[in-house]
Amino acid sequence: MGDFKLTTVEEFEAATERLLETGKKVGADAWQYRVANQTPHCKFGEQGICCRICSMGPCRITPKAPRGICGCDAHGIVGRNFLKFTAGGAATHSDHGREICHTLHNAKAEGPYTVKDPEKLTRIAHEWGVETEGKDIYALAHEMSELALMEYGKPFGYQNWLKRAPEHTQELWQKAEVAPRAIDREVATSLHMTHMGCSSLPEALVRQSIRAGLCDGWGGSMCGTEFSDVLFGTPKPIDTEANLGVMNAENVNIVVHGHDPSLSEMICEYADDPEMIAYAKEMGAKGITISGVCCTSNEVAMRRGIPMAGNFLQQENVVLTGACEAIVVDVQCIFPALGPLSKCFHTKFITTSPIAQMPDSDYIRFDSSNAAENAKAIVKTAIENFKNRKPDLVYIPDMKQKATVGYSVEAIVKTLDGVTNSQVDVTGTTKPLIECITSGVIRGAVAMVGCNNPKIRPDHAHIELMKKLIANDIIIVASGCSAQAAAKAGLMDKEARSLCGAGLKRVCELADIPPVLHMGSCVDISRMMILVSELAKDSGLNISQLPVVGCAPEWMSEKAVSIGNYVVGTGIDTFLGVDPYVAGSDQMAQWLTSGVRDWVEAAYTVETDIEKLVDKMIERIEEKRTAIGI
Ligand code: MSK
Image (cartoon, rainbow, N blue to C red; front, side, top):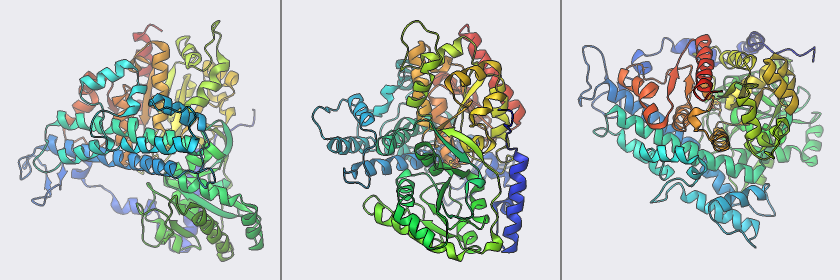
């Protein structure tokens, strides 16, 4: 315990500097240089007041030109841009979910894709009113995947998963007309609304933004998470490691990057194959190390304990180590820069999805019908590339931390069963966690999510916020690149409990958990929606009354805006460290930071000063405690 020490952001930065030196030797570009080329950013774009949705423009709003050629004002332009951003994110997450449903449809007893959690599949089937008695599990998998795929295009009704929310929340959604219908419909309707000559009323655009977000979090993302668990297993606590030091200079290093676990699960499977390990030895390596970047990494870390090499802004660093034989990507958050960068080294940049095709990559198209042979081919390609390494370019920073990950809702409930003083049986519920919160041992919880963004010193906001929150007895659930920032720093090591306030420290000791719980990838924020719903039902409170807030201090993607909209839409106040391009419209800012509260009992706070951001979150949690008298 005494030796525990967090890795600092300064240490991360020193390691990156050293890697950039290697890059300079081979003429490599890097995001740090491109940021310098791209700043200062366009002020019109930053404020959301540039419109290019028809070819009369582009129109830009200034005091002298307050309306575009069609007459749309700044509020309409900002609103349409915000809704388009949301639709992009909702489409992306939901299409990932759709791919998982197709993979489930291809699952067979003989593999390569099998049902690893039949109990969960049966539970969901009962929830959806599907008869399971006497049914073969694969027949059920096919039936459920077809039903799930229908959620994308159902002509009538709302998302099936909405019934998981407390009744009060469902009523709010109906009343505010934000209950999401078919997933694809909400995306299409959003794009229809933002077409030239449709909506320019901020209220209407914000309302649809919330609904499109909800079709992601309570639709497509939930399909992605739940059916990934069915296919690959529901995560439970597992030990792993994080940061670039997980790469091994003596081994063939394969880095998986992106979001869809269908690919990475297969790669992990074949990298473990004795035949492949023997082949790697034949080629002069000692073995094979798989590690991950971004949310693919979160997926395989949560289920297999595969180490996490880094998060979003660290993706180039894995190539800069000179020790990466292959970076294998599926979809989302992949820098096209990896193509030219990999050409400066021996690294194979392998793209696998028709959705994410990039120049300077080797494209090995991957789908569930050829998964086994192509995963094997990819692993073999990496092994055969080991001999092409240039030893004088190899430098892996000696930097990694231990982490315990894998806190699905099921795992959290099970793990916290042990911390209750209750005289009645509360096992299998969230009541032990509620007791910790109502007694004040834990003051509340923060859902920390989202990316890195060069506008914010990378990882600094995530880590500093988390340190202050846990010191104030606020437990953290984290996902996406925020979770990886925590893991790299050491905040997912159980010994990080020494940094907590006395109450949270005691809970971490009793439950044997770290103070920051890894809940998965960005799609898995749907897990957090289920957790708050269970907390609300078990406590008799509304979600908006719980001392829980959401935070994305370094967000950058369209997906993050969609997430923000469904987190707010679920009744959770959400704090952003980067403005979502709405500064150009006071009306839009007013709707998002206050107006939406009348519909869903929560709203956004945007605060780019990280110190102030954390104080506002703590203040909000304490206000909520006071309001319910705890
Ligand atoms: S990977 S969306 S940078 S969290 Fe999910 Fe990270 Fe953000 Fe991509």
